[in-house]
Amino acid sequence: MSSKETSLNLTSFSWRHQLFDFLYKWGMLLTVVILIAAFGLASDSFLEPNNIINILRSIAIVTVIAVGVSISLTVGGFDLSLGSTASLANALVISLFVWYGLDTTEAIVITLALCSLVGLFNAFLIVILRIPDMLATLATLFVIQGVAMTYCFGGSITENMVLPSGDMAEGTIPAAFGLLGQVPTIVIIMLVVTVVAQLALALSLTKHSRRMYALGGNPEAARLSGIRTTRYRVLAYVIASLLAGLGGILLASRIGSSQVNAGGGYLMDAVAVAWICFSLAGSGKPNALGTLVGAVILGILQNGLVMLSVPYYAMDIIKGLVLALALAITYIQRR
Image 1 (tube, rainbow, N blue to C red):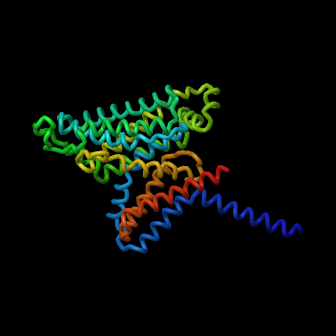
Image 2: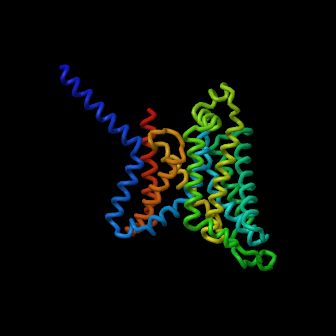
Image 3: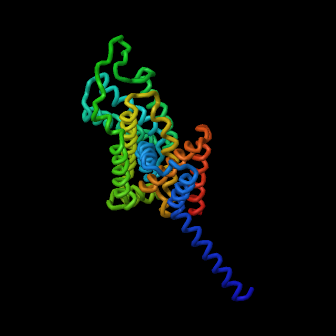
């Protein structure tokens, strides 16, 4: 082969490598732009301000829960119990209003405190009993789902409901609590959670965030370097459960009642979003900003497909394909 042919081959290889690297780093943002353009052309009402607000509101809860999933991934774990934890929070916060007459602050604080116990239970199974993360949190998923359903007697919790004793529930849901699930409050909460997590974790601004990433990358090396791996794994699962609890509280505020297993439907979307975030800017690791972008992609997909009258039962196919593509790009890059 001549030197000229060799040079052309090297140039072609370099160009392909640069193109793939660009798509790997910025493919998610490019996907958002393409989806917005496609749905904007297909539907006149897609780009209207009210519809954009609807998309942001629709992704707020799943984004908060997905950030929790991302935090568990940071330490090399994986929490499948967050959907059930959100359901438990949904039932707890509404019951504290309707059954016990507590105010907004008291109900939220108690709910988050109880949700943190779920994280401690997960940490006990994983760190102390050494059960693999996925299996431990799968067991917790069923336990917490059962606790939530038992607590609300297998039904909904609403104002003026008839209690099992036959009495009428006299508590009411405060108007201030109802504002949490409305625009702009719910969107602001989503953005605050994302920014705080991004600054604390993805940018590695603190020694604790660097240690969590080190633990997720190589647990044995992290332990040998003096990092208290047990402490950080416990912390990650507690924070993840707190965020799932916050997601359940926002859901309760949005729908104004407690529904059976209301948070369960958010788990798969949150998991998909958390894995999609790995490919943002070629990070190859969990990050909150990528989680938000992933949620935007799923939100745009779902909203646009609804506007195009795509049957609801076909939407999971699209979500699954997006997740598969994100995982493929991530793991091909790691090879």
